[in-house]
Amino acid sequence: MLVIIATGDREKAIAGLMYTRNVLKNKWLDDVKVVFFGPSEKLAAHDDKVAWFVKEITDESDCFACKAISDKEGVSEKLGEAGVKVEYVGTIVSNAIKDGYLPMVW
Image 1 (cartoon, rainbow, N blue to C red):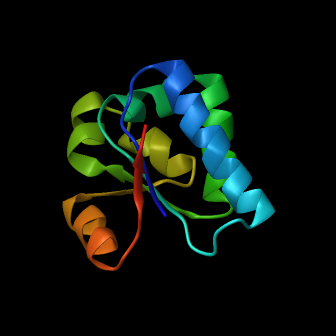
Image 2 (cartoon, one colour; image 1 turned 45 degrees about the vertical axis):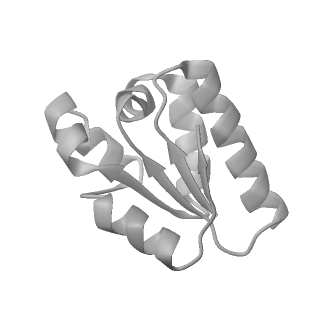
């Protein structure tokens, strides 16, 4: 599964992150990647509850944030400190879909 958290809406982001955390903790799926994109990057860097879920997920899965956006928003360093890999994600997302990952977008 490829989880893309793109929303800047706190409650929507938390819903996606809560589901993702449960998938990982309960081992419902074998392989999960998470991409923070757009407004969610700023939210992940500045909202304590969202940041808690990010930490929980980075302990269990590969998590990425779009470097172009996080650099623009000034949150790359903070996301990196939380265990998120800050990279250009266009290729990561495209390759994951080509490899059969099911994208779920919040």
